[in-house]
Length: 456
Image (tube, rainbow, N blue to C red; front, side):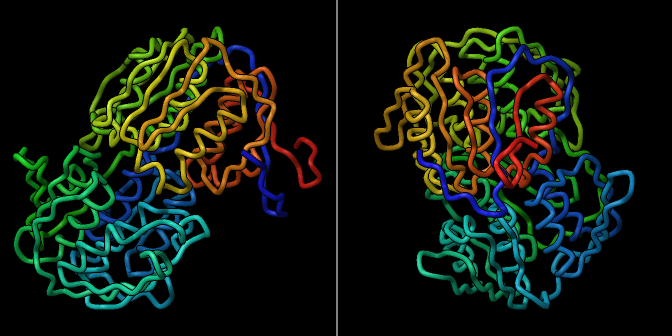
């Protein structure tokens, strides 16, 4: 993978072989839950108090969008947030286009919310977000009665012409996607009757859990076609405090790092263990990772625990396609673990990786190959041929505006023979602000470069 051209705003980072990692840490709040807490708090009657909100750029984009549509969203000096809502159906037309930055989740969920309001809103984002497909959301929402104007290929910028007289639908997802499911359910919030989504494979259910937390009636049942989620439209949402657990997608990076760096022993506090999000933990344990669960508890309707991780030799495994929805954002760092494991790791059902912030399937194949690992991609299956020791490294990886590419290869650099450099790690702040400082606090060797190429 070749390096991208250096720009004045780029923030290169380099990771080098590190001593044993040790200590206790908290990863940022769950991004999926943070987005939803702001949206639902912005609709609920009363004041919702949110603790542990992820303050990455993606979530701040959601806060800005909800403010622009009339919700009162406030950050307080102690780090807590409050949302004073406008009621279901009470959002107002924004005065300017909603700029969602790199936030794909925010964009797709807000498309559902706005679709059920009688006004027009314009949405745009950064270069990466403008390349991502939105037709998977516009198609079902148009079936309900909303109208969209997009660029070719269903891409941003786009205009949503909403309506408060949508028709409820029962929609079978062509491809399992929590974002598409959520967009339809959120459109169903302000739609009379019952709106249902059937998914072929279960996806993360934060929307269903949190809507119930705020007082909506949401039913979930198993059918012959798959898991069916139904929302009863036009409920009165009432303010409900939310404690945001640690994001399992963010926890995956120190989890893999501590598993790979010899002698490591760390504890990650308060990680969300939603069973539809914990695929990376299940897979690492199957590979031989030494992960123990301490202080199990429930917070805001979500299962939570502290994870103690100690270094252990890993072995190759087969990761079934049906597990993909529960760990779709973690395959990049799993591939790094696989490159250091003994034997072949086969990851199936990865078509969705081609339409994330970047083509992450290509990022796995090209990046690991550049570092000296053997990788095969056949259709939506990826095989990583581990040798039981880390690949050589010694390259610059183009992050392609994708925070997970940047973090995954920085983790690899902690164990590779030669340092791994990321051409631009600035987008890490979209989901994991302070990633390098937190990892360095455990003993990692990650160095930021200054504008002239030297270390900070």
